[in-house]
Length: 218
Image (tube, rainbow, N blue to C red; front, top):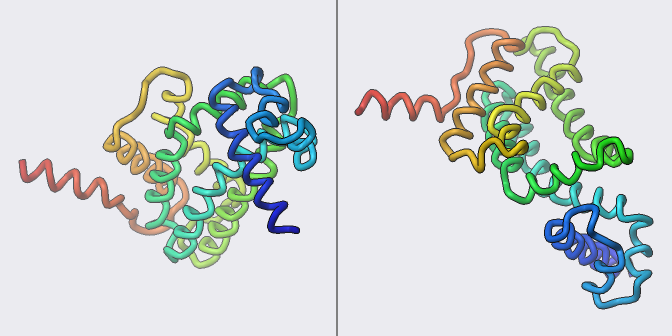
């Protein structure tokens, strides 16, 4: 029974994901999602008490598919200093995907109308911030980073990842940054973080090395 329940839940989330993107948050209704499912109008409510909760579930699903893998790679890297730039670059690429931009804009549109953003943050990004903070704290004790409040460091990392081309695309200033622009932005963001917190020689992002080599070759 649990397998059937999980399958139906994933089906509802997948359908809702399509409807939210097609119609936007305000114009999406549980009734339309039910119609797309082909079941009774009460079906989505059997799994999600409200449209807000369903929206949170959709965004958490999108986020988790990428964030779990990203943080697993970071934790396996062994050294946060060398793994930081790749983490930030992959994060920026994910946040600049058309789907994430659409959903983040919908989320921002609800600010002041509900606590949707707070609920989503506490059940998603906050958990990954804690994972980063724990890793930062452990490596600070090993002398790789200066002593600092881990959560504050994690928030700084998040702010750097959300800035630059990610913010410009979110606000419609640019259509979509190029792959090279995202790589450069991530390298610069990681450099800022490491200059603020790292102990010892800074580790340059591999993308920068390749770029420099190409420039010298030319």
